[in-house]
Amino acid sequence: MSDTKLTAADAVRLEECVKSGGVAVFPADTVYGVCCDPDNASAAMRLYELKGRPPERPAAVMFFALSAALEALQNLEDAERAALEMLLPGPVTLLLPNRTRRFAPACGPDPDTLGIRVPRLPDTLAALHAVDVPVMQSSANLSGAPDARTLAEVPLSMREGADLVLNGGKLPGTPSTVIDLRHYAVSGKWGVIREGALSSADILRLLDVCANP
Image 1 (spheres, rainbow, N blue to C red):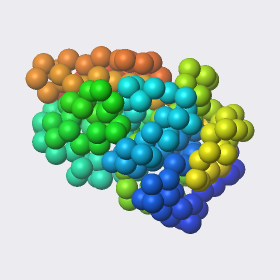
Image 2: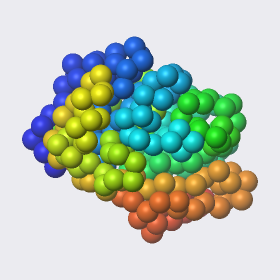
Image 3: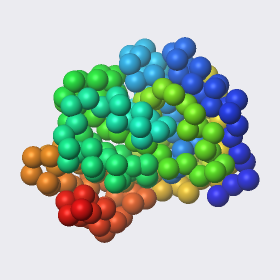
């Protein structure tokens, strides 16, 4: 979508910002996001304040590699692991049972549910795959406002309030599809909470492969 290309140095800056308790604006595979350490309650509060979003609304935890997500998510059922390996990386947010209640600041009032993202980054953003820490992330817009496709569309107050801002050029602009897999391991049932970049038909096709390998 853009000639703007992130570098290995940008990945290092993002990782250092998150580790130090900062808040960063960054480009992903769908829209611009704002992120912080998913275990840092103070950083999470700053993120919510920048968005004007109540902390009762949960955020997702993004990993920049599927292997890191699978390693971090303990007690996955076989069916859940198969679904993750089929759907990720991709433009989806997966709601899963949070059996070990990890990443509490990202979970809001429901510590038993965890939203997971692993982006499929284009070549221009592929340097971010080197980021070795998970991030709590949400779209880089004011609560209820349109998603940001370019850095200029990210609210000025958010850009000025963040500790780091990365420009990835123009992004596709359609947010991730939110898929509820909380009952998938028990019943095989799933649902779409929010339509987005991956269609329900494509999700059905991919999960059907899981069920009928």
